[in-house]
Image (tube, rainbow, N blue to C red; front, side, top):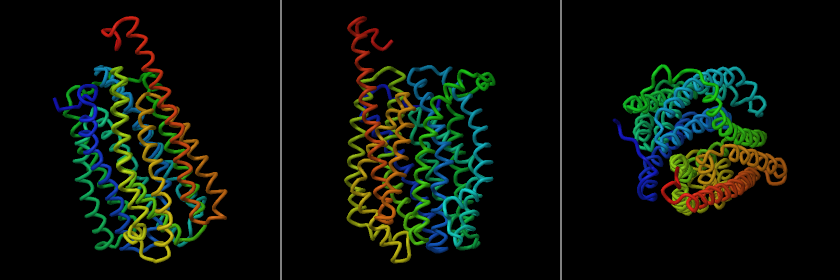
Length: 457
C-alpha cells in the first residue's frame, strides 16, 4: 500500500514540520509560476496586458475559490475519517464528493463563461483592456474543471498526510507552465490567451500526477456502491463544504469591489494593484501553508479525539507564521521599489505599488495569523464560523474602501485589506479558544467519570 501519514501519533512539532515544508514548496511554486506568468505577460505584452490579466484575478478567485472551498470542506471529513481509522466511511465520502464535484464543475464553468463580459462591465473594466480580459478569462474558465480536479486530488492527499506528491506535481507543472508561457507569447505571439492556455495545460499535468498516486492507495479503491446516491452523505459534505466555499466567494466579492474602485482610478492603478496582489499572495504562502497544515493536523486529531495535540499543533503553526511575518513583512516594508520593478515597467505604477507594499507589509501578521486560526477552526468541523468571518472580512473591506477611496486614493486599498484581515482574525481567534476550551473541558470530565482508558471513546 502506498504510504499515508497518520498525524495523530508521534511528536507534534516533528510531524507538522515534515508536513509543512513540502506543502510550502508546493504553494510557493504555484505562486512562482503565477509571478512568472505575470512577468512574462507584463514584459512581453506590456502593462495593459498585465492589467487585463490582473483584472480577471478577483473574478478567478470568486469562481475557483468557491470550488476550492467546497473540496477543502469535503476533505475535512476525509481527514476526520482517516484519523478515526474508518476507511469504509472515508470511501463513501469520496464517492459522494466526486459525484458532487462533477456537477458543480459543469455548473460553474457554464455560469462563468456565459456571464464573463457582463461582470467585466460591472467592474468598470477599461475599454483598452476589455478584449484581453475577455480572451484570458474565457480560456481560464473553460478549463475550470482542471483546477477543481487538482484541488480535489491534492486535498485528499493532504488529508491523508501526504504533502510530498502535490509538491512533485507542482514542480512538473511549474516547469511546463513557464516553458509554454514563453513559447506562446514570445514565439507564437498568441497574446494573453496563450498564457491562460499554458496554465490550463500545466494543471492537467499536476492533476494527473496526484490522481495516479491516489489510484495506488489500496484503501481508496472505490467500488460502485461507494458512488450510490445518499442524501445523508451529500448533506454532510455540503454542510461542511458550502460554508467554506461561500467564505472564499464572499471574500472574493470584497476583492472585486476593491477592484471596481481601483479600475475607476485608471489603468496605471490597475497594473499596480495587479502586481501588489501577486506579491501579497506569494508572501502569504508560508502562513497559508501553516494553515493548511493545521487543518489536516486538527482534522485527523479531532477524528481521533486527541484534543490536546491540536493545541500543540497550533503553537507550532503560530511560530511558523510569526517567522514568516518578520522575514517577508520586512521585505515589503524596506524594499517596496524593488518588488515593484520586478513586474512593472512604468515609474508611475511602480511608485503606486510601493506605498501599498509598505503599509500591508507592516500589518502582514494579521493575515498570517488569520490563516492558521481559521484553518484550525475549519479542521475542528466548524465551517460556519469561518464563513461568518468571511462576511466580516467583506464588510470591513468594502466599508473602508468606500469611506476612504476619495480621501486617500489608492492607499485606501491598503486600509481596506488591513481592516478586513483584523476583523476576520479577531472572530476566528475567539472561536478557536472557545471550541478547544469546551472540548478539553468535556474530555477532563470524562476522564474523571470513567478513567483514562475510556477518555477517547
